[in-house]
Length: 64
Image 1 (cartoon, helix red, strand yellow):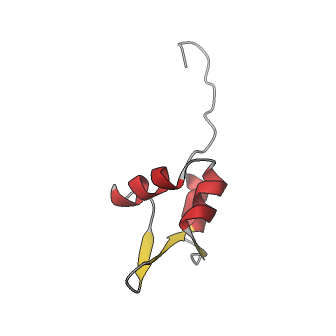
Image 2 (image 1 turned 60 degrees about the horizontal axis):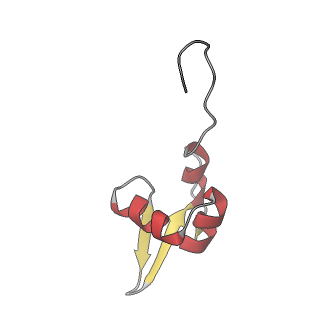
């Protein structure tokens, strides 16, 4: 795994095109690696977001 690039919750939300609230829920569920720095600052591993929301591959047959 490559070295993490840390960013803010709004940066992560922008990258995934979701709300900051969704990013916070994903952090709480453990879906996104994040670190608390100090009392209020949270940083998200932006490189981990690359594997989230990967495009689906159509394999034929069945409904999507």
